[in-house]
Image (cartoon, rainbow, N blue to C red):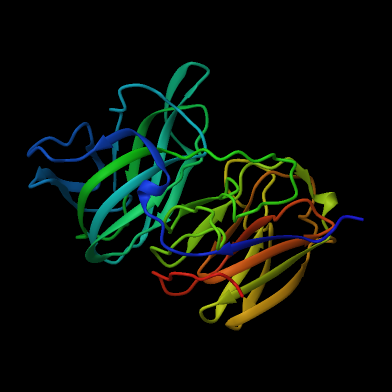
Length: 322
């Protein structure tokens, strides 16, 4: 009989330098009049570089800018991330990065399914965002879709692509020891980089929620019956445990078990066996949270699964669960 497996998460502040190994590409916008290959593709005007920033304004629906100035195709892996420092003055909060892939040796444009969304803070102040695309193969173009809202003022300090620290994990392994490393889990959006340490895996919320996703898994749902979740929250939360049979980091909304957290210490067991969607392969897992710390476990399972979503105030710094 398989044992109950748990993994611990403790949240705290981690800087970009803690995970970055190499800068792959950067657009710094430090030369007046030089957008460094970026163009106002749709619903953005004017589009100027002045005083060390790129400035533009939303003029209609679906505003986005793009570049094909990567110079060389980027060979992709999970640990590459985009760092963006941006100021927004408007109402919209939803943004996305699209990328243009190289498929079969041929370059193609931007297509649905090759994007990663993230939340912005439109308060007219500078904020830094970290986005892990989880892209595949090779990439040669990048597109930034900005929040909608006519008149929204946008100012970009820089956009940088980094090669983060690579962490190995056996996709068939049933455990993660976050006191040794991040276990190849990633804070793909909404938080600082996830790293392991004596207190566990750490991140700090930058927006309303941070999404944590596991490395690619090679597991079967038939190995699982229930999921056990233990956490300490900063307040009332709405949660959901999600799972996916694809490795691209997308989680179908129907593949979920929902729950509510009253605040403070919380333990729950979520029934998975018997769900009509609980079938086939398990390729990704994750945690999306605004909590002080969390412990996730599975009964008759090989690894934490799904994505757990929590929503509360941003800028939490978390301590270990005790």
